[in-house]
Length: 246
Ligand code: ADP
Ligand code: MG
Image 1: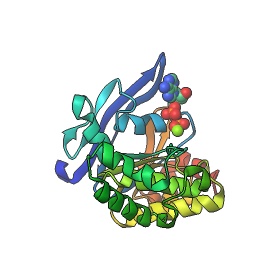
Image 2: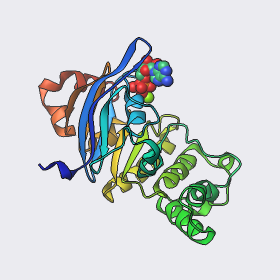
Image 3: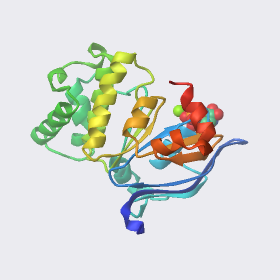
């Protein structure tokens, strides 16, 4: 495969906090349209890895390339890359004093410099995409956790990202609300969005992921398609981990 077929390349990322080395050289490549799920015990560096990809955390060494352009060490260009790499967090991070549609359009107005009419139209289109158009004028406090998470997905999508990062997007939600968020994510994956998803939802990982990356102690321990990881006895540790959730 030629280098250019990878939309995202992560090369030997290392990160320590004090004396604790949290990422010990993590590398992987992502093709356009792929969904990659990261699984593994807590405290193994999954969130740190996602944060290093869009430079919310600065890695000590290693490279991140988006469409062949270096995201790491990109200086003043970093805001450009942050728009291209959307991120969705466990706890939504919506602005409480803004309605759903205002939450989605604010960056279009302030960051992209769009005019009010175009920003509103774009924000409504993204809310539609996640099934939240009818809730456009509601404040976050009036939404369920699943609805709030769908608004935060719409907000990230509004920037027309090349890649979406999801850090345990359903971990704060009840099972039925989890389902509505996973449905939206599944639809995005089927529509061809490139996605990196940290999750404990093994059903989602096994049915949607092109690859599952099993992380432990700051390294990728095992990696492969869901079929291979679940059926090849070589991947015993990963299977044992997945087994806890079934
Ligand atoms: P995971 O997402 O797999 O649960 P994290 O990436 O959140 O793991 O954390 C990995 C380790 O790094 C944990 O021990 C955590 O306490 C530590 N860590 C994460 N962020 C920081 C930080 N900003 N300062 C110090 N330690 C951190
Ligand atoms: Mg985490």
